[in-house]
Length: 152
Ligand code: RB5
Image (tube, rainbow, N blue to C red; front, side, top):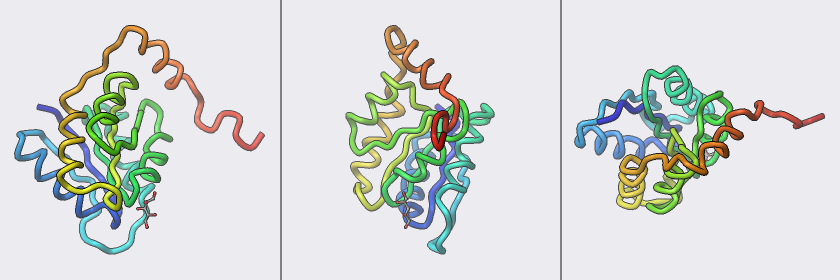
């Protein structure tokens, strides 16, 4: 069983709540970083909250949900040590664990139904990093400085 931080904005909170309940049913230890309820909030705040817990080693993995799963992944990926991936199905969820050693899985409530999201999350949790040829590639991701080259 894993320790997992979960976070969402208002556009992802309903799916996040479904997935948190699912994870707890499976016996995982979940820290729910919010949001709670449908009031409008900013997705970077929740992507950051989850990412900081992953980066600090408080949890092994993160789950982020927003409308598309994209903005919250962008925010989470700003935190060094975090590799957040937006996934849409079982295959992308499995492959991002196996090849990218993703430690935060991101889903879009406006793009995926709860059943498919649950299955993708299960595939993410059930997969593991394949190491081998993927190790130096992931090391290159981690070695990149945030925003290197942007705006210069
Ligand atoms: C909120 O309206 C929406 O922009 C957000 O949830 C997300 O989809 C951004 O990437």
